[in-house]
Image 1 (cartoon, rainbow, N blue to C red):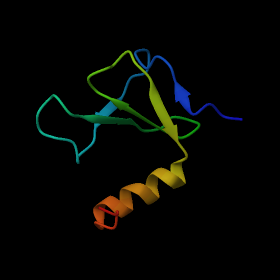
Image 2 (image 1 turned 180 degrees about the vertical axis):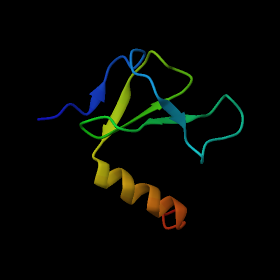
Image 3 (image 1 turned 135 degrees about the vertical axis):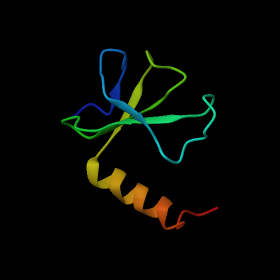
Length: 73
């Protein structure tokens, strides 16, 4: 089974801030493209902390739902 948590993300490079994050530095979600087992997502305030790894298809479906404003309130 593939791990769904990366305990320390400080050694991974290429993180990018989500375009849906706040323009302020205090509330940013970062994602890492090209990770072999899915899409890691972390809180930018904790760069040495953990990241959750989502299956690529699940992440794509989530992003599409956000863009289409189809998430329940």
